[in-house]
Length: 187
Image (cartoon, rainbow, N blue to C red; front, top):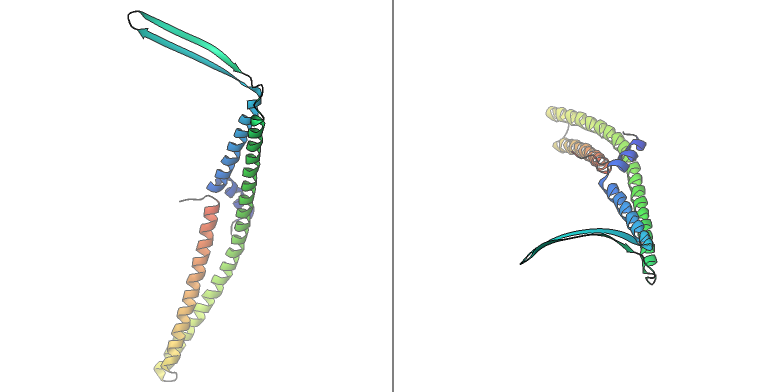
């Protein structure tokens, strides 16, 4: 099975949900920066060119700067900056919670993978034993030593063992697919 540290690194770098939360943190940080900067006002540059062609034809050109300095906004600017800061902190906490949940899930999936490997080994041995029993009982039935019910029971046991092996393979495959999803591997 893969190494947990490598899987965690792959998850942090490739998982689409983790990337979404990272972008959300960046968005909220920029909103905070913009709201905080509103305290200092702004300098806007503008330029215009107009051409009038009526009875008289003339061009008008305008270039300039506008300085906006907030004197008092009733605390609205500070409140907006505080809301943006809270939004950034909430986004960071959501990110941390999601990463922690994914790390816990990866760790439990690795434990499950080890368990599935042991289960598959045991189910293979059970299937081999069930098939041997089935062959012995069929041979005994041909010789008239066992009953048809015993042969049917041996067939049922072999089929149940095969089903158990398939279920173990399926569970292992689902765990591997979930690990691939969490680490951002798409094919």
